[in-house]
Image (tube, rainbow, N blue to C red; front, side, top):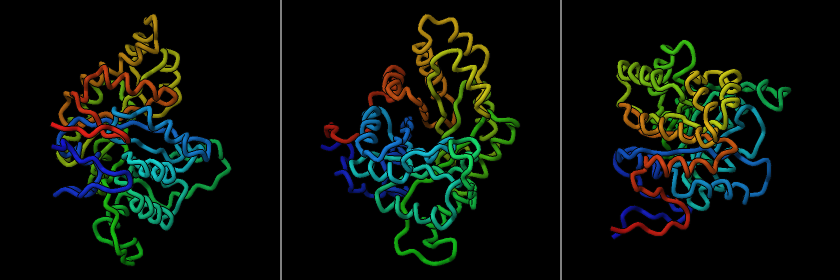
Length: 333
């Protein structure tokens, strides 16, 4: 007996009752499993094998792979193209959409195009300003922001028409997500901001890096007080720190990332700081999974992607579950 659906690459699963997408990621979340996602850094290349090589690092350890969209306002292969390649062989991508570079005409077209190729998950972002990246002379667009982008995607999916009012013949069947930073000041505003995103259509949230558990717990309590904790799946962002020096640089230069002194002291005192950074991630996963309202983790391991498998395996967070990947043997009872 087949334990779970084993899709032929390019063929979608059926949409289950109460689901908005045919995707495996939504199935994992709605089944109450602790979900794991990670990010694929798009290549500075037109070679598809570079995408597949980066994706294979996550085989058997993640439920979905984020394809970033000009992260940090730097130019790479587009999120839409990466997702097209990933869906071609059966991976479950999260297509990130930034409002920085495209107006509502292009964005709506990309949502339809992504869904047509099998993309089941969208992450709606406002996007970093162009001054942060490698093309500061570029003209920013920001026709929409994350909230209006969520509303736009929900309109396409649920009301079957463009923002202009013109009908579409086949709606994109997608799970809608957004990002949030529980640690940016003023922190009391962040929970209200998350609630606005949920009201605009967000079904899952991926947070900024978390290194401060008391702050995270306070944030989750505020989300619960606002009455939206049961209405959204929250995945907490984590990432392995290579060294105390790296941690110092991040907390100084990356807005909204709070790294306590105790974390830096722990890394500085370790014989192998990179290994200790992974151990820290594992310890945090163990504590985070017990927090009410947390449904998973989003591991961001830029230039340390090979660490993701080690962290997830040693954390035991999948509890013996093996997320689907191309070529995996069918699971049977």
